[in-house]
Image (cartoon, rainbow, N blue to C red):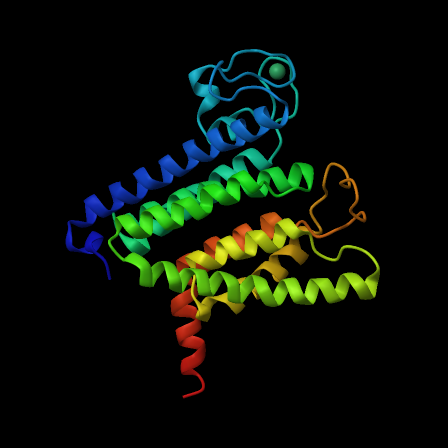
Length: 269
Ligand SMILES: [Zn+2]
């Protein structure tokens, strides 16, 4: 399947554990960076603190997932709630990192997907908190696609395939949304969501485009039941948070989209 499986099983387990640990630590960093930049603070300087009492977190309070479980979701000093989304996003990113290494081995392809997973995590967190999808983060995703594709030596043909898959996902959606906006007399889907679909499409293929769209809708409907802090300005309350849904759909599709679509199409031949 990939070069990872030509080495001893113990090395495989170590690689996967290391990937999962890296995923959890980086997810924790991304969560912190998003929270600080939304609060207008620098995320590159200063130690991690409790948002509530300002206590500087010790090494054991920084261990992803486990510190949250050990402290039962509360600050050890002031008892303030630490949102469950911290361990949830750290755990999911750890699982995604392990799964990418399992599926694509230790390769440039894996690196491209791991970087994109972190960018998608930031997109999802910012969208969840503010209702906006950051153009800067989407640009970082596009750069990741272009640079890593070139670094893999795949050249213009692969870039063209990505561009085609991204456009095939985003352009029809844009047309549908424009018609829906006219009919409903309000915004049916944000422009940011369509740009995010385009960026996600770059990493996939024409074969996986439809799968990403379907998965994003299903996950979005599921997420609509998760209580959000506040309804975002300009959005009807109970609006589907599409950014996190598209991000999760993209990661699932990058992992298993191609084999899933191939198995599905095999049913008809
Ligand atoms: Zn505290």
